Length: 245
Image (cartoon, rainbow, N blue to C red; front, side):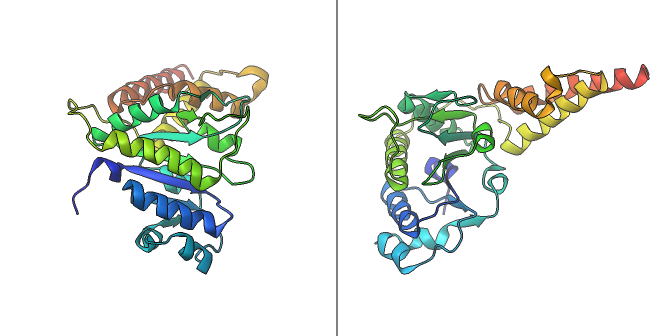
């Protein structure tokens, strides 16, 4: 089966607790034309309830990937978008979610892979999981802090993407973007380079500085050629520091 832009979009459910929700998401994906999805550490989910809620979409249940951690779900994706209904530190949430999804559809149309992350039914995505996202979206509602049912949130997002991808405009050839794994390597290389010249982050908190650095590098999808330039800069810093002893 030849790949279409919808196949470059991966729906990721992080630790879903209700088998019925998983079945409902399978049905949503069937109706909106998406096939690529992953469950992160879901526990025992293939139950009669899941199959009943997936009415007409058992093939989607059969085709889902089950992975142990988030890295395994997004490692080959070039843009990671998380859904969050809460504000707070490290939560630069965009309420104009349709614009973000339009940009995602355009990126998928150029051959790059998109991951859409949905968190736990009870408390959503953790802070560390949110930091793995380059964009965060919120679906607007009539109440200040909405909390949509998991399958409803997936429906709203995938339907918007379905509309955008149904007849994608012709895109110029795009430069390849780095994947989530590539971003991890770049952040680590930058931290190592700064350590060689004695850089001390605020309050000596390297972990917090790594979050800030990741957020900075995730402001926009990063092209591979730009990442290569940054790797070269980091490498030169390390060589200079080594020569200086």
